[in-house]
Image (cartoon, rainbow, N blue to C red; front, side):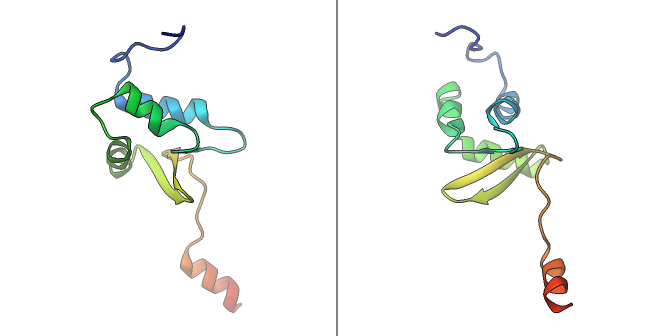
Length: 97
C-alpha cells in the first residue's frame, strides 16, 4: 500500500465522499465528475460492499451533498457549494421581457 492512504475502515463512507469532493476537484470547479474523476472506482475499491451511486444518492436525500446530472455521469458537490441553477420562471421572464 502507498504512503498516506488511509487503511480500509479508517474513513466512513460519508467522510470518503466529502474528502473526495474536496481533494479531487480542480479549480475553478467546486464539484467532481463521479466517473471521470475516478471517484466511483475508488469508492468501490475502498468499500467493496457498498454501491457509490446508492450511497451518494442517500447523502443527497439527507442534504449533505448535491448531485447534478451531466454527460456520462453526475457531478458531486458539498451542500452549499453547488452552482446556482436558473429556474424556468426566471428563464421565461428573461425571454418574454
